[in-house]
Image (tube, rainbow, N blue to C red; front, side, top):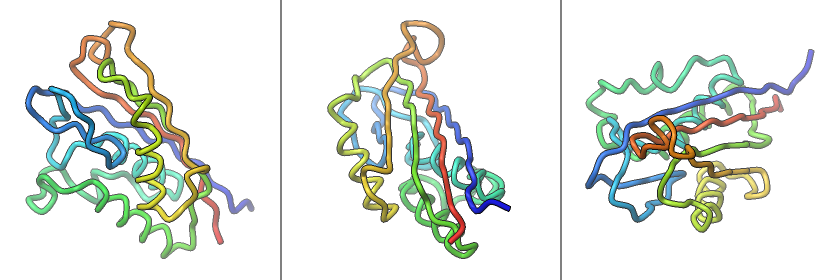
Length: 160
C-alpha cells in the first residue's frame, strides 16, 4: 500500500467589472474580478479541491458551502488553512502542486512569483514545491472572451 496520493482540482468563476481580482492570495490590478460567494480566488479553490480529492475527503463545496452566510466574502486562504488542518489530522503532508490558471487578461507572468510566495506562506511548504502556469483562452470560449477564469490543479500528498 502506497503512502502517496494524487488529486485533481478545478474551479471556474465568471468575471465581472468593478470586482477585485484575487488569484493565489494576491490582489491583481484589473478592471474585472471574480464573481463568487467568497473572495472568488479560483486558484485557492482549485488547490483545496485537489488536496481534498487526494485525501478522498470530498470537495470544497461540501466543506464550505457557497450558500453559507459565514463564507460570504471570506478570504479563501481560510479555506486552504482549514483543508490543511483536515489533512494533518489524517497525517497527510503536501508534497507539491502543479497549477494552470486560464485567464485572457491580465497577463499573470509578473504576478506568479508573488502567488507562489503567498501560497507557500499559507501552506508552510517551499516555493519550489509550487508550480503555477498562466494560459490564455486564445480568444475562444468564456476564458478567451474575458468572461471567466478557470484553474486546474494537481496535488501530491504523502502520509507521514
